[in-house]
Image 1 (cartoon, rainbow, N blue to C red):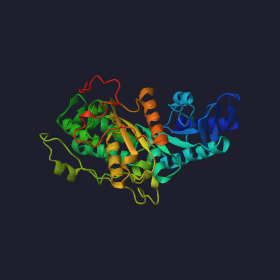
Image 2 (image 1 turned 135 degrees about the horizontal axis):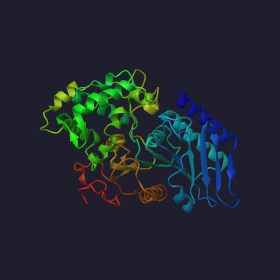
Image 3 (image 1 turned 180 degrees about the horizontal axis):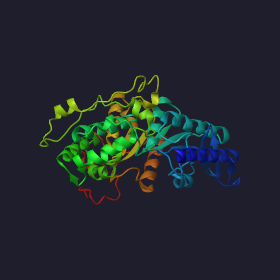
Image 4 (image 1 turned 30 degrees about the vertical axis):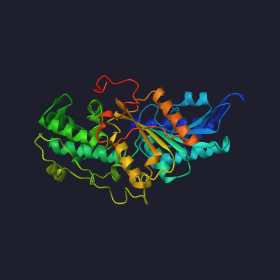
Length: 405
């Protein structure tokens, strides 16, 4: 507790120091760089000497406790943007943790400051990574017209559905492993039950028990069965269990979560009846007042009602922010009649936010051409009945475990 308090004090001191020294940098003929604190959130923006009027607002991913928490993260496109005359702005947010309801406003407030100090851009693209994907897609739905396009990388594109997935994952682990994980009163008890009871009963990837093989099958279907899901699961097998454990700083996600709509699946021949699985696995409901668009729209289910072009990149083997979120949001846009505004590209790779500049820069250029010239870029059919071909066009270097090589 003491180290956490000291860390927060250090963060406040750093923010005050930045506020006192907020300043523009660079010569009159060179790029303009300004950094400081705006509405309790650190920020930085850069404008090239020959600005072409395009602005990119960067919404970064989740930051928890630890060194660098609460700091500004540089826009990953910075070199590409500078080379082509685009400006960018990034906020460190007013808080650590998972608070999209705050971070949506932090990005919007920084854009307003940019307009006052630099000028109104001819268009603004919001670029979100991971949790920033939640910030991005919710910004588009809640504030239509503010941004003219969006680039989302490895993003939580279906918002609260990430929490639904994580609780469905843990509820399946509880039922199949026979260990009451969701009844744990605190973080320490939860971790002890996982390590001392659940792991011996279920096993780990490559060393599963019979129950473990059942659990892996259920998880495969929860993930959407995309290429390289198994390789990605190895990295998130236990972290996904504990992500929303008691005591973790993700209260909004926990309170809004629902698994009432989840339909569990399992492959045949594993000794578990799918109907029985769905009837007996524990179900989670949101707390009263949460998951309401009227009361807390950032944690409500998204609608798919986008009004501007969105280009989304996602690793197929991402088990931290699973590819199934892309499939779910595609269905929302189909129901809303906006699917023509969403282009999704799968990259055949395990892991989370592993894109290099080749993939990212190309996607950004395609998005700009879509906005400026009306040239809609190509993408993947993420709802294809056969997912084995997903991402072949967008994966420059095949993964060693990829059978499609």
